Length: 287
Image (tube, rainbow, N blue to C red; front, top):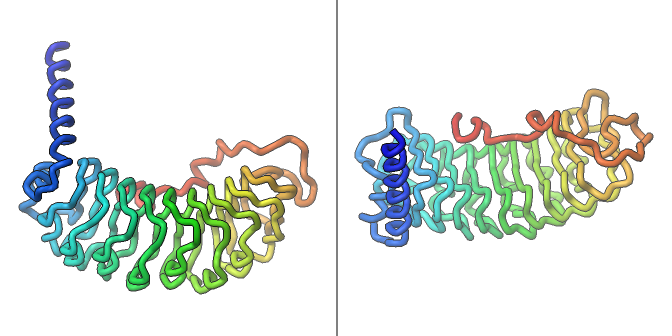
């Protein structure tokens, strides 16, 4: 039994090594080896090609016009074939953990796209054509290279959830208030030195995450009647944000009465992590 297990592990390692070598060969034939047989449309209209060491997406993956979900996470992709735009019914596209420096044009030509994962890439800007994604309601841009808030995001009128954490953003534009459908905004790990004033005008926001920024003072948020959760931990703040009754705070002095800070240091939020850490809307990558 031990020999069998050892042999199995050895074969798997050899297979992974072979994939690693083939991944560097750009030919369509070699890349198709990495994804296997793509002759038939998946019954659930979902195609998962994550973690295949792909450096380019075989055109064969773009022939399924009825495809609804396409997962390309954790590869080495930096571009996509124009044939991708033929997936007219695609609703979910996962491109996180790749090597994109720019968003491929074909992505902006997917009329039914509603969920787009772009986290953990090398993006520093977004094309104007992104605004053509009229159905987009969830956008993940965390852990990229943005130094300025990408204003084209403010033209996504149906956007409900925006993840922009762990970039290098210092402020938010006033036009963000156009996003009347936005309900949660996640901005942890940026360079904000003040609580973004525009957020005070967005009364329908339910979740605001400004954890791990550089905010020293928080304004009163009690007028934001839609607010349910504000995360402000790991900021050099001198006060906690005042919120309406029933709103949950995660950060220093969160459990203290408003305007009565205690000198007991940052509050631990481990017991609430499951509630405040939003994962991919379908637990993740499984709607």
